[in-house]
Amino acid sequence: MRLAHRLARWYDALVQNDKPPPERPYRPYPMLTPEECQRIADATRDLPYPLLASTQEIIEEEVHGKPMDYGTTAAAIAAMERRLADQRAAKAQLLDTLADCSPSLRRQLDADLVQLNAEISDTQTRLDDYRRQQGQGN
Image 1 (tube, rainbow, N blue to C red):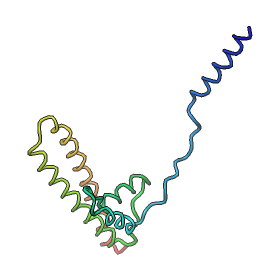
Image 2 (tube, rainbow, N blue to C red; image 1 turned 60 degrees about the vertical axis):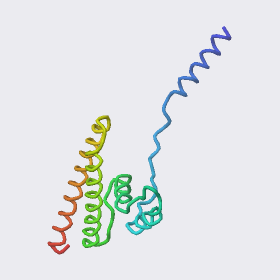
Image 3 (cartoon, rainbow, N blue to C red; image 1 turned 135 degrees about the vertical axis):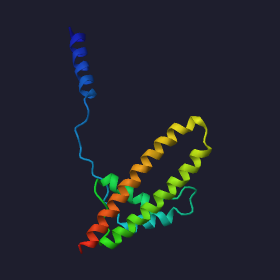
Image 4 (cartoon, one colour; image 1 turned 90 degrees about the vertical axis):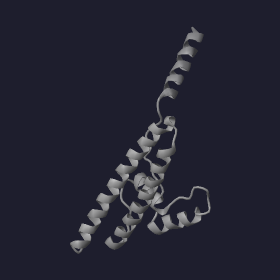
């Protein structure tokens, strides 16, 4: 009987350990400013794959779920124009790679191109919205 009782307690302990831990809210670090994103880009400039300021801004927006605060509409327009130029350059590079790639890579590169086109479209929409705001005097 003692063995059965100990096994039952051991089993209960195992079952309780299988339960997921209680939910803890994810508290990310504070959102970086556009100037801090530019400093990160400057610091990675000498690396083989430097991180662009526009890429860091996109990462910040995805992590925090809200757009960057550029301060003024004019600064936001300039940032979106830089981001759009960087995305178009990445698309041109991807198209060059796609032209010379092996058939085994084509499927992944096609998926990357679809995603990049969606990002360009989103950036263009935001740029148009910021220009509309500037035209309204906000």
